[in-house]
Amino acid sequence: MAGVRTVATITLHDLFNSEKFDLKEFRRLLEVGVDWCYRDNLEYRGVIYATADGSKLKNAGPKTDNMESGVNMEEYKKIPEGYTNIVAAYHVHPGPGVIGNCKPSGLDEADGKGDMSNARSTWPECFYLVVTGRKEPKAGWNFRGRCEIYYQGTTPNKNDYRVWYVYPNWT
Image (cartoon, rainbow, N blue to C red; front, top):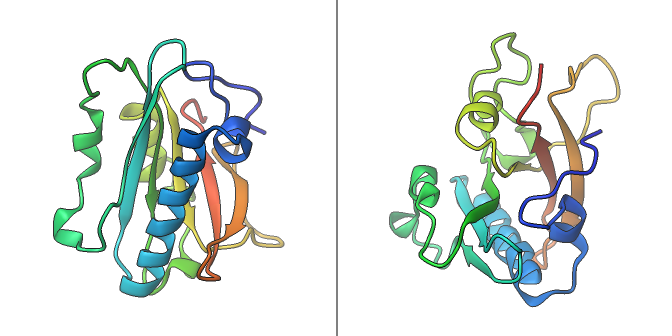
């Protein structure tokens, strides 16, 4: 389990359960990315920024379904003026084939390449989320304390998804 962690006074529970407008908008944009990913088999991404006390939030994410206008994850590292923290960064995995078959990359590798490495080296200050359609396997797969499926949902277009929280301090 991830335990209780806060970024700018916001917890994972807040991200997926709060009725605060900006956090609801974070979830809506994430689900837009899921729907487009199912449709296009392309990766979509987004972040939410906050002031130090968490009183002011700003979302950045998929605003159009034109992939050309998509933003590289590194672009999100540039925190807008007036904000001090990245609360959460996510990307929706299209997977090799379809979103439903994908999981965070590097999970089964000893050196934790891909998403595992990104959570630790590039995004340790925030909640690093990988969104897929894959369900937890019943047996034969060891998480090794690297991540967990934190939230499961269904978009307005009836696409199922899971949000994997990748621990920044996995071993």
